[in-house]
Length: 604
Image 1 (cartoon, one colour):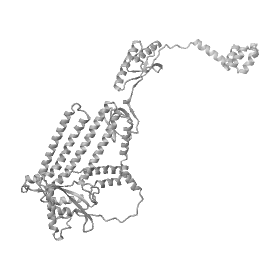
Image 2 (cartoon, helix red, strand yellow; image 1 turned 120 degrees about the horizontal axis):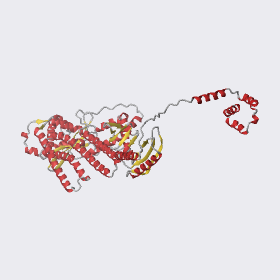
Image 3 (cartoon, helix red, strand yellow; image 1 turned 90 degrees about the vertical axis):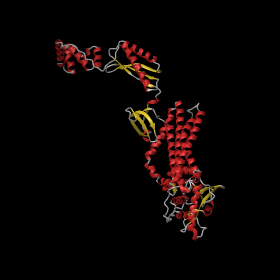
Image 4 (cartoon, helix red, strand yellow; image 1 turned 120 degrees about the vertical axis):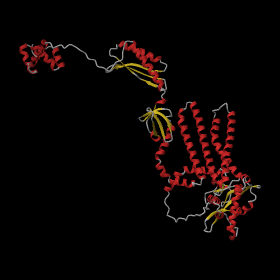
């Protein structure tokens, strides 16, 4: 039943290739010029579903389960039998077919049967021929085939070939009987369910439990031997792979044992078909589980190596690609399981191709976030565990996912930021600092003397150079000026620490040292304050007030400049020509007020 995986991998490869070609195919379809409408072809149908090999086998098994052998005979090519004997002889051949399949035969798995009306063209058989079942005989395995032919309406259908129909009566006595048939006589089979004795259903359930127990014992024994063999390195990549592979392989091996044992048990083919489909689905689920665990194991080993080499920037990329690989595995296994259960995966992919543009338009944000994730992985401006300022949010990056990034804020809440938005935001990463800026300003009291300030500068520089975590290439301590309420001393240097806690510890130690230095030298730190000066109220001197008044009155009584010059000459016995050379120079340089006071001096 599970003898061929080749077609499964072809379906898987075709699904992945079709997914990559969805959008171009849909776009080409939109750009192709419209053709003139043609007459629609009439749909090719068959009421019994015989248009495909897969449909024929399903209809035949269903007829056998319902023990409707008249309908089962319609799936046989009885062309070599006379029409008068076809009805009776066809039912007998259908019963014989079920008997030989129950005793020692098996029907091909659903994925081995083509769902295409033309059949499978790469199975090494003629295009109009398909193998659908096999029977064990003492001489070897005999294959039964389907043949494509036309019905009375001219529709292409598939039937059990005339050669196989002719061989069925001869195989009845040659097929090896199963274990169950030899242990339980037919009269003890009891009631039937779907045409199958209940004992057969119970035997399959019991065999499923036995298969799982046997697979567990075998794989646990192998795992124990490997642990003893590699006990020197229990955390090696080989041991991790073994630990990851044992649980899913246990189920997968149990499915194989169940499928092979069901044939030798001689359980009815209808029951084996029902359990076979379920077992196939479980088997593919175990394959997917196996791949997921292997991906996790490989990812854990790579992360451990990256952490040992302190390449933390690669963590986000590793986790992202691990998620992508797991998503692809889940999608591929889902496609294969749907195909195994008879769903038309090709039609579904074609439907996606037709609606690919609409889906792409509707998923713009999703695609934008995915591209943003790739940008964050490529540029790695942030890593998981970094302390960052993202927009107006400050916190620790907890996870960089495929769609969004989680930030744990200082309030211990979670903020999810879409990666498409995050890739275009300004991000300040505090975790990548190579050193911290130490830049305090000390405000001293106004009473601090210059000598005290000089001594404080020397002592503070010495304290900085003596600290083991100070960058000695950049140490600056300067008295920068007089502030509104203090004398400012600026300190500029860097602390050679990479962690915020170390920085706060070193900063605390230095600030306390500065306080000791200031207190030791009799200075102090200023407070924001105002100084009020109190003085006695001295009244103006009355004598000085009177003198000033008289002088101002005399100035007001003076004539204009031209008249003053004429009036001065007769009274003083002097004219402008008699002035000294110095007075002329002062008048030219001093302007109006010096001349006014000179005239005032000449008058009085």
